[in-house]
Image 1 (cartoon, rainbow, N blue to C red):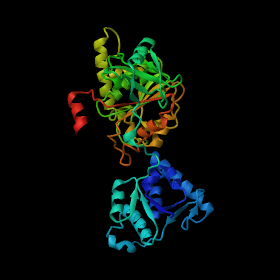
Image 2: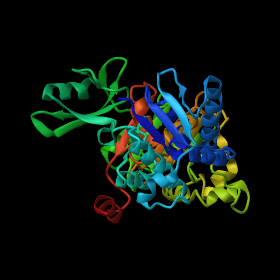
Image 3: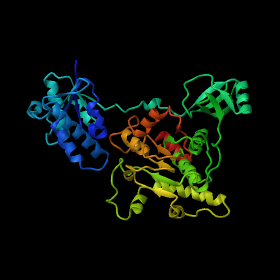
Image 4: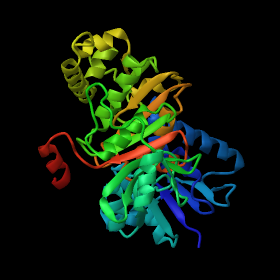
Length: 438
């Protein structure tokens, strides 16, 4: 039986392609959704862009029929806009019709009363709860969701014979006995006869072999990895052939600190890249910073304090390990132009070549926003995405639907991509306990 999916406005603002994502079923848009799209179309952020795309799509459909009666799509479904809904038919719900969300939900309820098999689709958890409470089936829009519990971690353990482990140490490589490993995936080789006899290796996808780690484990700008996951992360950060790196971890796991240290090494020390570009979402991608006082740099400082904290920590260590020269303050680094702070708003439309780019707090970006950011990467550039999927500020994203985890799952088979999930907090004993039990 054909279903009717009543879409909430936030679904279309989240993903403009949602309009055409329900194959041969009916898509119902209450007139309130159109009115809300009209309010967002003037915005210059991601929501405004999606609103304009949906409105243009609906306008194109008008040439194929009347949207009030429904226009047939190529997949065999229909898209229709409901205008004549008598909310008195849902007076038993005692919901206020002055609330737009209530009118959208009541539209689904009234259609169901008429015998239509209705499913209400919304990114708003509260709206889904309301819908379920009045007896209308509700669901999230899950086209770009991944199974976070099964997310690719970037490494695994592999049992080997003692002779094989000895061979790995002697020849610096070992043939992989099975397929299924991802490019740049790491393995901890474990002696099957002695679990304490281990070695860290990286999978060479081209030659189907486990190879020695080359860059990981070294001290960079006074920062040295404290556990095997950080060693793996440093290996990816230091390898220029890996153009996109994602680091996921809770507070204190060192993801941002390691990325900044590697960036300083590559830009300031090695001159591999021209500049270290650092950005993080002020809000979801695209929100302007114009309402804050001061210059763009002064405005950004309000949002970059976590970055400054990490930079100050690195510089403090660096000063202690270097007898002469070096940078004494963050201002010294910024004044050289080797480090640039940028709002994600201003990355759209740019091509950024030969830069080491760090996008912090990337879990607050949608899959499309992540795509927008990554496609700004020019020739000889490297991009690092860091974030904690357990700490999401965007109300319409969760650990399974955010752009960071979506990127990990979709990019894991690419040879220029690498990922590590960091699980051990190294910030302090208190931070580690808090991350585990609070």
